[in-house]
Length: 152
Length: 235
Image (cartoon, rainbow over all chains, first blue to last red; front, side, top):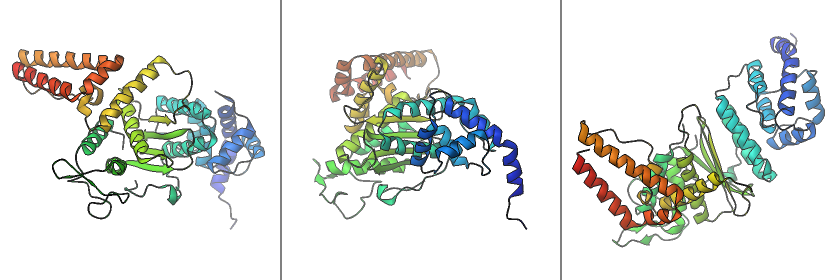
């Protein structure tokens, strides 16, 4: 049997151009982010996505689908969570965004506000925000935890 | 779990006011402060929380309320921040802060959550950044500066353990249900409502009033007046 998730491959083939268009829209809408910067920001967030991969994802030519975290991380780094393209992207990915438009706009306002912060502050905030958008807990380094209290 | 700033601020102020006793167990040892120091004796012979233990107590209280507290060495321009959503509530502070500074950050974040609380249900996300002095964004609006001033006053009230040193409407959003029906009690409630609203408006605009309102004798006077109105109007 071929080691190939055929349904996923077929689905990705069907939507990748539309996903690429949404990703591009996220990057160039609001405050346009360069591919180089986005690549660096995603790297800081913990996702290895090179500049050429960004370009190919936007063109819809890459065979491997982007994970949910990377899709949201992309929107987060572009401060475009409130863009209609983000909702469309999440729908294409089959993920329901449990946030109102107002919440997403508030996310973006916060993201833009902290653009002025030094990079280390931005990274800490972005990692936390990613968890709040997706509901996934990032694995914190043990030395960064407070010694007390129950974890959620 | 969403943030309940009213509950958190009230409980934190209460814990900071009272000596360490019921409901809060020390992390280790008997009579020893969390950092190894000794508990200071209170006026009535009770052990009171030493200054250095207040930070631990605050964190413990917040954790009890489901607010995840974390320290990180990565923050540079921020003392800390609070993010609250239906995913949970978390406060991240810089581990370079002294215990007193951390405590002040907790109180200040809660104070902002109190005054910035969304009045409508559609918004389920709240965030607040606390900047290191001198690193704040430039060009803040007068409304932001005023909110900062009010948050300072509320944070001080929390740290003093006397939230009642601020107008009731500044920290209590939920109104008490009417105890008695009728015209007279309704009139009494109206009088109290006007007084509380006036006090809140003065608190927002006059730093002098903030200082005056925080004095224990004024708090006592306000409470007596409220009791008198309640008795007179049976409300």
